[in-house]
Length: 496
Image (cartoon, rainbow, N blue to C red; front, top):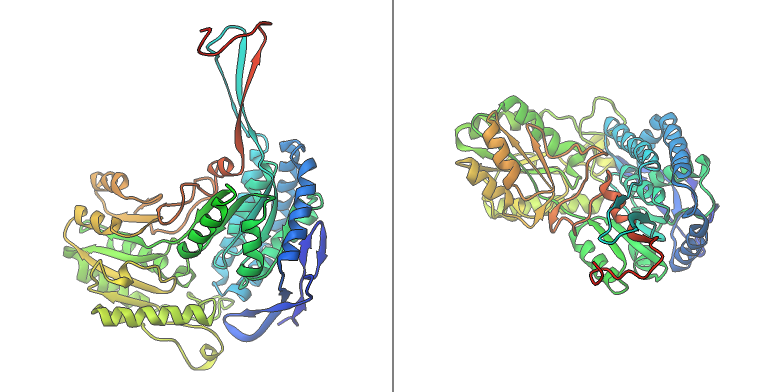
């Protein structure tokens, strides 16, 4: 283990301490004796400095030709590739996900950076006809200004890249506030952008808690757009704060995702999907498969296989290549999981495996919890309705495709859903009827790709999407332009 070091904020192209001089600890969730480093415990004065720097930098960055912006992002992507293994190991150490998944997280940042670099030559608008003679019409994208970005701990490099890269390619400047549990991965990403040649002030990093850093970002009048990924509870407060000054606001929030398994499904494949969807990232994904709805004809067979495979999962430190499930991110998250397991027991769900924190040996040093399955769940139980964000899966019976769809849709969220079937008619019916922003056939509810829009319906989001070209619509505004070369006054709708 490397000795802990003290890290800095990145403001106006300089690595600086918090104005207060205070710091907070970044601890390995697999071994709480492993202190990764100290990060600035910033306050409103640091946020003000970062926003001021971003505002100054915006004047020249917005006028930098988009292909030139893209060249910088392309360099950053190649540099990320060169550091992928180092950054993945650092991510596993600070967040806990197994190393294979951490590599995927960094790869997603690489993919997004390359993708948005290419969009520097594809910020297309439209040309169209006019209703009047000798008049030309077109649309162009315009940048917004300073964008505040608030990101979570579960994808500590991928999600910042989802927000930073489209914001930059559209000509905006940014202030990033990463989660306090995982600031190192954001630090590494911002350092790469600096080394790739971003001008001073274009990207700024301020670490600290939500009340001292996040709230000033929400309320500052010079922040024109705010993108937030986190819980629905906090997202509602973010939306209300942004509404006061009419900030653009993108919310990506909770999920309670479902895999539906029909009698004609490939059960081996469905079990693999439920295993990866439910316990990948220790269930700490907004797209995690926390519900599995199984048709009566294969319910027992599916559950028997699912439980057997789950009991065989190896839990431990994610840096061990044989480990399949890492720790929870902190003790508070483990206590949340424990409370929901008790709720499930009290509601009458059948605990099939797991249901306890792991102890003894290395387990005593981290925040470990056994992968847990509840069977015979009623769709209305709290464990089948509320986001747990941990390794807990509720299995529910259904008697038909229509019943599965009804159960799948009967929640407050609408992020991701999945159907396992060999019947193309069933697949297309569910594809149409599921009220989610993402839908899979014969694959689990996780595994989004950067060139497709990411986001959900209902209490999962507010209509915007991350990733792909859909992200450009949030980080830019449309401007309609009319050029009249008739050399006379022409009045639309009047002189037609």
